[in-house]
Length: 211
Image (cartoon, rainbow, N blue to C red; front, side, top):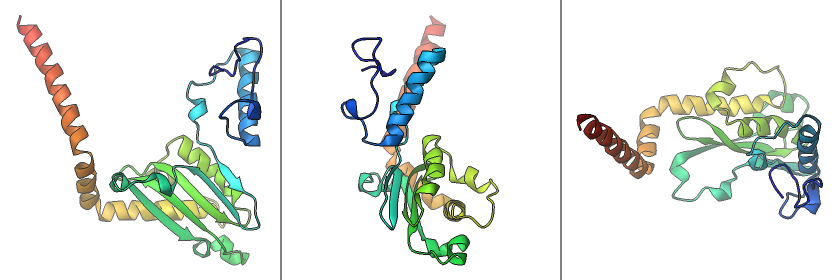
């Protein structure tokens, strides 16, 4: 099947559970179906990366648990200096306190320094409703700095997102030198490699111009 969901018979499309290795989610089948419709109706070709879009998933138990993007198990010891993880319980959210629904938490994974949101996990009653916003932030690689510049209505459960992003921004500003040093230490070999390639390319053009 190609990126337009066409099978080996180009006039037949496949979506949802009948596609090998597809996520077994209704919302994924709906997403694929919409892309097929757009292609058939207006020949709008979905971006080639749409299969790599952030995939939200949820468990609809009494205390719902949901996540999107990178999770904690994916952050190895070698990678941990590249990320910052901030978790707040729902009792830190005024709306949850007002309606006496404080069971649960929210955890967001950020890239160090840039604050790009790469993953999130939430738990609590009706918490899946918040996941839609978190999915958008992960999919579009929105940074904590941009989130904190937005005005959220008050009080709402999603304000916990802004509160966590605010903590990231404050920590990053207060410890910017330490964060920068850890980032440089982790990415030193990449920086050296890129620098060498730039030097080689620059030398090539200098020598070429002198011939």
